Length: 598
Image (cartoon, rainbow, N blue to C red; front, side):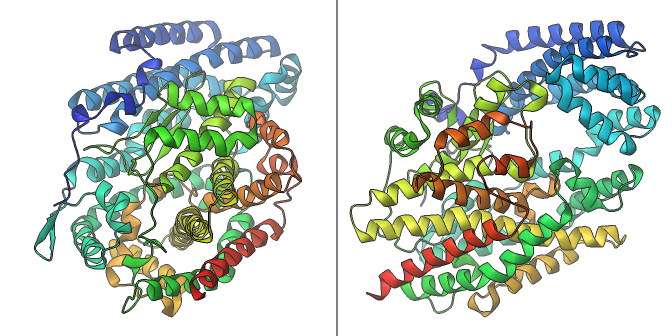
């Protein structure tokens, strides 16, 4: 029987992140909160009904930067602890109290945006000239004026934000705390199941009986919650549609893509080209997996198995640092210092434990260390996961250092480019130093099964699903669990064709992903990886100086995504970079299959 996940209190602290680098303890955290609330009161007294000229506006924005920096640190301190142990009562209470206190702060600051929106264009332009660091913020104020509601309406929406955000909070609570999965049995052996075990172990298990049984029991449990989850998701969709209509957007797509600074045609191209041009290569890969493993048929439960599961190198946490330091050295010594610090200063939370979020992410509160969550399983491919998340950390360490808090976070369309660039740099480095053809093939298979499958298939199919869902929402059509299941099934079956058997239960896959509560986020993974594929290749071919890429990272949000890409001579207005990426994937799959024909 596989070991049950340990409790948070049972794991080795040296392999956890040090959230106390933000505040040494809860007392310091609460003292900072008190200070913040005092600063906000002073801010209201100082600026309410006084945003009348460029000098006052400039002063207010500089004061607001300080307030926002404190808010990001306070929020991170509370949320990060809940992310690694959502069942702990103290973490739940801290997170809840933080939400309540920050909501009060937000209400007090609500006047600011309302009054700023009343200021004439000339005064805002004058303020931009007084302090260039505020230009981007004020440009966005000017641009968004046409979508801003009356002050009373904006104030009400702000007050209702905890209610409006409840579907996502409720989803996470169900997923990470309330849902309990039954054990399953294979050949007389009992296996425990959970979100973490399923997504980090069983999906990749080389034992076909165990893998397929885990899928059946996992999805059986999901089915028990499908109507409640669908109701939560529908509430999220209705909220987004209502806001889109209220703010004068023509469609919910326009509303959700507004902050990404790209048109819907970019999202459509990403979905349509991948669904058409990548599907044949991935079907070939799926069939190859079936032959290698002697499967009677390739099913949805078989898509994440390794090409060569007898050749899965193991790696320790300590040795992963050495591999990353070596592989990412091409980016320069300054970048390596970020990698070094991420290990030495405990930026990374490695262990799997009860109540910990599944998957991985990186949080980089302004002016603080970055915080990387993964669920370490000791396999070599986790080094690629680490490279990915350190890519996010490196990006925001540079952006936070060289930009003010208003100018750090670029469009979602770009956000996954630094992470996937890192991931591919590591893969290319490992291939370059592979001792033999089998090792090279294993690395290539990891690129396909993890890097590209994850971003160009899993998340892209989520995007294709979302597009159909939002089309229904724009047409004011009702949504139910059955509707969602059928849409997901249609998308999966369209992509995989007759190469993979997609059982009806696979329609429930939409229930696994929190991205659906984050707007049109999933398609941006493939957009970022498109740029990452081109950039990593050019760095290795020495046609791109890594220093130029670092300059892109430093730019933060000061440029739109297309302009950031143009800094390294990649034109995302055309489909050329995307087709280059798909060509690379197809060639890699051909090389994998060619090896096995020898």
